[in-house]
Image (tube, rainbow, N blue to C red; front, side):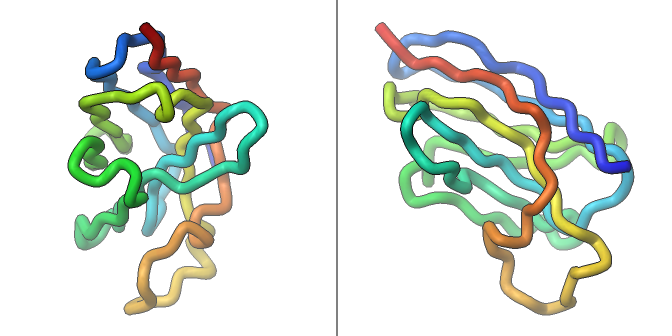
Length: 125
């Protein structure tokens, strides 16, 4: 059974930082983070290939967010700096469907099909 448990959300002023963590059960080839603001569609934020360390970022967070993995803790972390009000939303950790993995295929948001319950991030002055 796939389980992803997020932590680290909270409220912060614009320009501040937050670190989100997600503990993952089992193995995944790709891990990532999505976010969803009220009235908006869910969007991919960052993803990482666990084997190679390759990363993928949404244009809106490039240079501000960093995704990393801790194999010893079976977890993935999202470091968020220079936060903006537009970053407000529910952040969910996600992983791929391992049997569907295609070696060599480019990483994409559609790879991530299992989600945790999420942790709320609010950026406001």
